[in-house]
Length: 260
Figure 1 (spheres, rainbow, N blue to C red):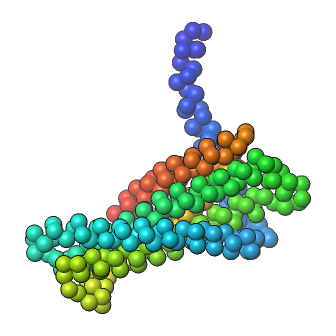
Figure 2: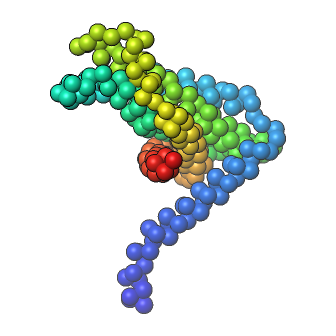
Figure 3: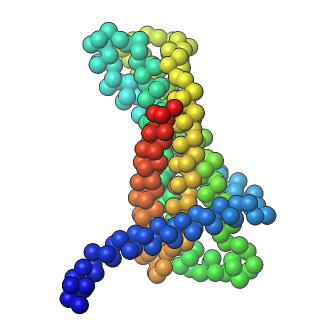
């Protein structure tokens, strides 16, 4: 008996992890099932798209501008040492579009969107608003979860494309600090180094990033159990889990792209 009690705490984290994984899987499969059940909440979906995109746009724009600026300024001396300044636009475009743009934009969205969704649904759960929706014959899962997850799935790739554009423009400005190049020539050099294998996979993984951000935020919000303090815990947990999921998805996407 003493041996069993000694080894019991070792299994507790593993059992909790398996339980949470199973519960999240059921939550995700329920989302898939509810997506195809009519009626679809178009009004709420469009409203969530507006909140997701509009509220995140300034932060994404500032971060993308700084990202392109810093990447160009720090890379220029290394290329100049080898007399390869002409390769700078192509290097920046490939780096931003393939990896830095999607991942950094998704991390920003995880911090801003996933935490908002977790806190929003968590507060609704604590104040029993979700229970009131069920009593009113409204499907809270379809109205709250499906619309938010689809909104993030749709808007995060658009934010990534916007961030990539801003980063390339800031790279053009940074290039002209020590050089002189027209914007047309800069974009010709930048885009000439891109292929479909650079652009298409980055958009596809951005879609998965958006889905992960939305579903994790909703899951953490729906799992809130307790007082108002648990709402903050759910929001913080949503950010951490979504950020880890983004890196995990990116790792898988890189491996798949490397095989193509």
